Length: 123
Image (cartoon, rainbow, N blue to C red; front, top):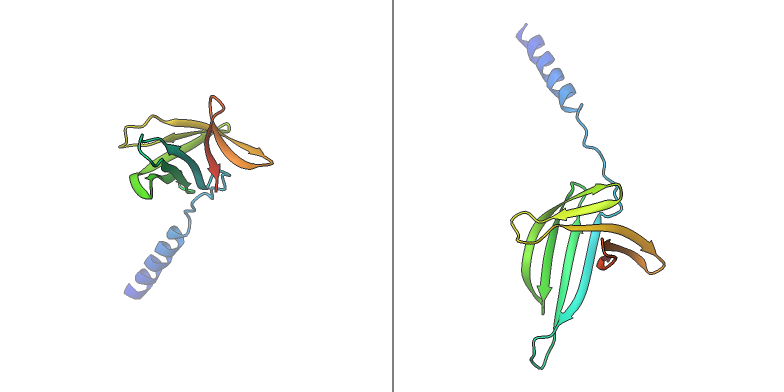
C-alpha cells in the first residue's frame, strides 16, 4: 500500500511541475544596443564614451558606460513596452527613466527618445 501512495505522489508531483510555462518573449528590442560619442576634456585627447544596453527576454537588462576603455557605470535595468513605447528604468541609479520608440530605416534599427533624438542603435 505504501508503494502505491509513493507512486501516486511521484506522478502527482511530475504532472504538476509540467503545467506551468513561461510565456515566450520575442520583442524586437531584445539584443544589444549602443550609443558612442566623445567628450572633450580640455586636454590633448578627447575620451570616447560608449553606452550599452543589453535587453533580455525577462524584461530586464544590463546597462553600462565605458569611458576611454574603462567601465565607469554598470547596473541592471528594467524595461516595459506599451503600445510601441519602451520605458527603461534604472533602479538604484540616479538616472531618469528613458522613454523611446523603435524605428526601422534603411540604415538599421534605432531607439529614439520622445524628442526624436537617437538613444541607441542596434549592434
